[in-house]
Image 1 (cartoon, helix red, strand yellow):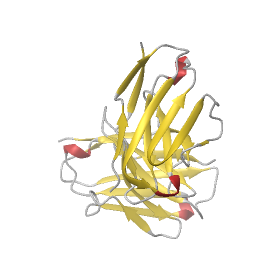
Image 2: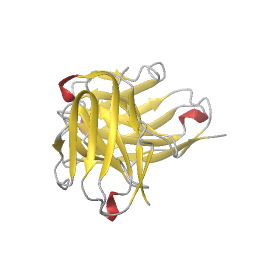
Image 3: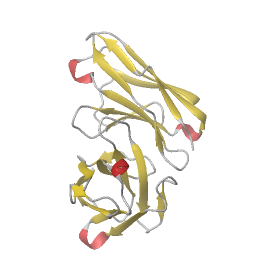
Image 4: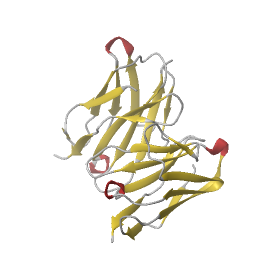
Amino acid sequence: QVQLQESGPGLVKPSETLSLTCTVSGGSMNSDYWNWIRQPPGKGLEWVGFIYYSGNTNYNPSLKSRVTISLDTSKNQFSLRLRSVTAADTAIYFCASGSGWLPDSWGQGTLVTVSS
Amino acid sequence: EIVLTQSPGTLSLSPGERATLSCRASQSVTNDYLAWFQQRPGQAPRLLIYGATSRATGVPDRFSGRGTGTDFTLSISRLEPEDFAVYYCQQSSYSPLTFGGGTRVEIK
């Protein structure tokens, strides 16, 4: 099973862009679905979107206008960009992967706080 | 969007007791693409059950999943101390992927 590790700034200012990277080890990125899922502190899980190894993407309609997920197989990484953030985007962001739509391997998560 | 409603919100039980958690979908989850995750404090969710009834690798057999269509159940036959956690159901039949609101299993 692959291992996943999120990285990126822990603090982002309102209206700016949140950028996170997930580094994949222990397996190839030339298959599978690569997801971002978030969890506001003390609350439930929300799927943000995924990118398939072919480059096709699928986003949650609630975030679609602000989200971009991209893939860099040469670096074994995939990334999340979320534009025009507000306090409501404060959450633990998890990257996760799966051979189908089910995200069965998860990173440990990284907390991103939106605050000035 | 498929809405998943979990009940109860909190389950207070003692170690050794049986836990039964419910997940109801707003429309049929095709091919039973329904999963259950366990989340302990400060940890990422861990896959327990997929395809409504199949245990993930390494999951003890005290965990079992049942159901089809719109009604699904996760049972834990005898609660161990490490089982006290939050449990989420999740569907992968339709986009967007969705999660239930969670059931917290706490020590009574």
